[in-house]
Image (cartoon, rainbow, N blue to C red; front, side, top):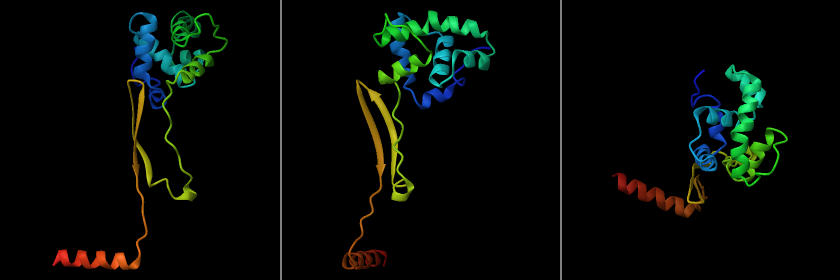
Length: 160
């Protein structure tokens, strides 16, 4: 099966894949292969090497070996754990999360506060070690009856 971007695509919802790919390529010394990217996305989706192999129709031992000889080494180098041991495949996602590669999840406001339809994160970008978060915020301010009556008169005058 040829690797493609749709396989384990849900990783892109929670991880800054482009930055991670670039940084891992630096640690490797050349670009990641499509298979390495695919296996990385599988790990980032919370799949074990066994699950990755099964979902891709690959030999499970082959996937485990590939991960040990490629991605695990690059990630250890990237996060400064070159001499560390990968005790469990979950170490990889924990280390990458600790290094800041996981994208923040939008803040959810409890419905009982009535804010969920008034506050939305519209965009999150990462550039030059900065995170920019675009927010749509709707604020409703009650007006006194005197101000409301003046606005109504103004609106009626402009229509005629």
